[in-house]
Image (cartoon, rainbow, N blue to C red; front, side, top):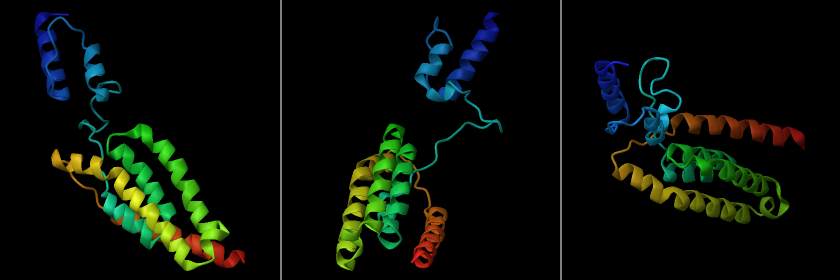
Length: 170
């Protein structure tokens, strides 16, 4: 490869990953520096892939309280990927689904309204506190906050469907 082509390629890689590629290193090393380089830095439309902004933990807690701990649990788990900690997503999703189902269907929580509300309040507090520091660090670094409008609407639809299923199941 010619010297000019290597120089242009190095400059392009430096533009894409935002880091200087040391002389004498292979461009494969750039993939280790920036994970976006592994699958190709550009999406099919030619733009850089930007991670989606995270949802506010406060909003997730409110959805969990107003609608269902199941809805809040799914959003909480998905938010880990948006906050840059995808390895926590699967365990959080599993734990949140088990907890949400228990709060909705286990007789200990469903008989008195107060105990169900107290359990939902504890779950919502957990959703908030477990992601509060990650979200604040994201916002402090200039990160944006995603809207909860679409997930909130989908949660309302899911809650209505679940309510209808429970109503007609009796």
